[in-house]
Amino acid sequence: MKYKILILLTIFSISSFSQSLCRNDIMNKEELNPKNQVSEFLKYDFSELWMKSENSSVYGIIGDEYQRILIKFLTVEKNINNDNEYFVYGKSSVKENLCVFVGKITIIKIQESKRKHFGVDDEFKNQGIKTQGLLTAKYEFFEDKHQNHSGFFSGTLQTKWFLDKNDKLQYDDINSVSDGYFNNAFVGTWKMYNSKIEKICRWGDYRVPNTDCNFDIGTGEFNVAQKYWERGWLDIVLKNKMPNSAIIKPKKVELTKQWWE
Image (cartoon, rainbow, N blue to C red):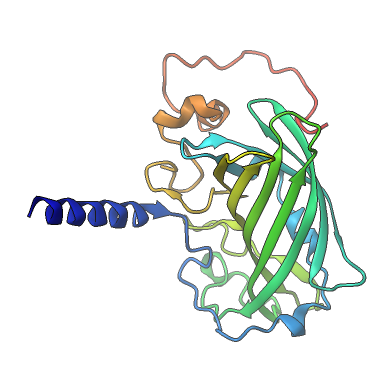
């Protein structure tokens, strides 16, 4: 009987953990057409969509303790010999440990959405938008093996897009004012070279996707719970001007180079 109870408690614990993830619906309840229309959209160049957001709006975590990771794409180029493949060059930083990485994004699915809301008061409804939807891809990024604490990233990417009236592909931020908005969701792992060390690693625009519900406590914007502040998130606390007598904002901020420069 005791063993049965233990098994039930274990199952309940696992189930509860799996249900505690938030920021896992990039479409924010927007319905998708199930048909994969990847062949119809590969003629477009998606590279600009992954370079669109300011890096200050890209947030990421690595490891179960949600240590902050910084990710910056420096170049993204479409493979002229393979329309569903893009070459990526960028940099990552964890606790000031900087690594260069190269790799690729491979598009595997493109779906159109059945959108019913077009921004605040439907301001974009009559702007000639032809269609919109979701791109799903695989990614692999390999850090320089000669750098400290290096490894490789792999996982799944989801990106929202739309076609404007001029048939130009655009980054979909139409409903960016909604509380549940985020884009360019990278969900996967980081694995150290020549080691068994493997960690969860997730990043995205405006929110970190697939994270514990007690991590991002922001409603209108990204915000981090106090238990995570010392894992690289103090600048977010200052940015949001959270009340805390132990945090003193500098009177003068000197211009410095960006972390990836």
